[in-house]
Length: 387
Length: 161
Image (tube, rainbow over all chains, first blue to last red; front, side, top):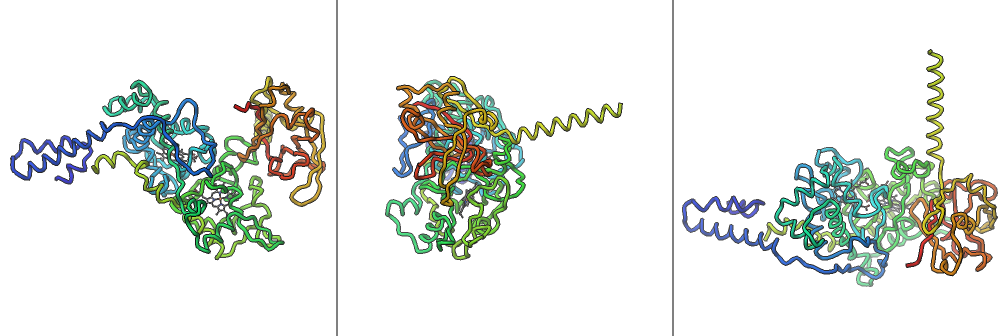
């Protein structure tokens, strides 16, 4: 019972039920404990909310081309509110789903499924995307159709197969929750709750999701010495093959290069000759855009299986087999893959089994444990009930 | 009656397919930003402008002849005036794969340089290959090919803030 009392969200009622009961020792202990849970829950919300300008901390080699709209500067109170909203199931039609369902911190903010079920039980048509280092991104979604995080957030909130609730309803529901109006006041100056303000706060929180302490980052700042296999994998990753000169490579960096392993490019990487999902091609109608998708970041890639926009590959081995041996020709296939091979006259990359292993060893260097355990990114409700 | 229906049907499918064909092939370059007349240029629009050729070595190490329109001419059509203020302006060029590069407007100004920078649509007399075209910037004599941006979709004139 004590266990229940501690765990239940509405611990208030369940704990007070004991009062009119027999007034003996264990009950008093229970009551005292119940009160302490209550008080800690209370102080959690009352806890002085941090305020002031939010200072982004990231390594210099990430560059300063960050993307923060003028009308939504990042503040500590905004990030605090945004984090609560990111994990707020009341923003969904049946109060069951939050952004955090499809974007789980332990999986670098993916959900380890090919497709994710929304509030109506229907699955999304694309694979959930990792949310890391979005501070530098300018185009969002697999087809880049959203131009800002603010604009992006409104889409899952209202899509019937995701959270499925109008922004107006969300705003109304939050207005009746005692903790929210004062928080909106702290962030926006008055306690009016609107859809726009909800999206803005969520976007502020998302900008703080910076992943910059993988073994690769440590290597770049000379704090980690990679193994021989990792070094070989890194070299292959960064080198284009030139079989005439005896240079072997996989040229992944052409699209996934840079310290963030993200360049904001959109390509067809040869998954299908006639794609089921046309990606950017569905937006532009141009044959050259068919099956073109965002080149996603490879940060934390070992944690974000399954892979590609439709989650078709379960493992990194399958991904490497694809790039090495199964890239499919089509009108819109990226020119990077045309005639690029480690064999003279070869049609595909043709990596050796050993080389595939080495590249995967390098990809594993991109896992950032601090990112997936950072308490500032976790569900604040879990923190509250654990206290 | 039947005949009329068939004719109507044929006309309809003909129209529909031509519409679809159009929707699929109408690649354009948008010219926007600090311009008086925003443009959306198709291949045939581009062919109305004065054509210039530039010879450049490609990856294969051989010289190739590109033909197209001087960027400054396109900007002039869009109403961009080269003056003192334009010394702090730049042209942002975007490609369909998300790649982007910039030129300072002075780099495009004939009174500053003889180096030609063109928006090309043919190479050695043939349309640019898939993956490069339909529009590609060719920068005369620049050592690296990085600003010879392929699959150009937009040109935007902006102020350096």
